Image (cartoon, rainbow, N blue to C red; front, side, top):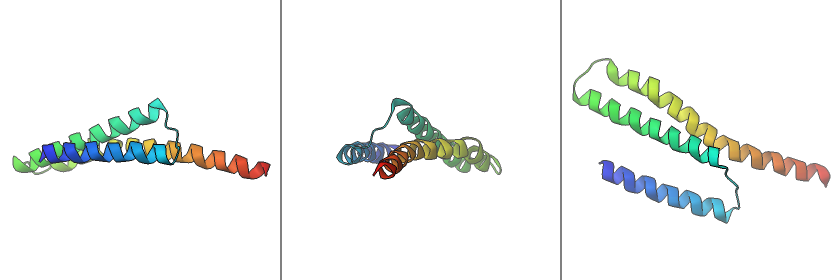
Length: 98
């Protein structure tokens, strides 16, 4: 299961890099770090959620999703929002000059 997740993650990363280069989107190093840390937290939360369900813990699975999954999703959203906002802001400056 985790091998398939790793293959899908690698293929998604390659697709993302190719798409970003094709559309000439600049991404800074800290946006990559935000995305990587966010993805790691989401995967960590998912793994612990599934393991807690397998061990029949009644309340722990939701805690892992809340404590690790929510900050992971927020970091992923921030990693996506920052390049989009910078590109949107640059487009607004170009429109104002014309």
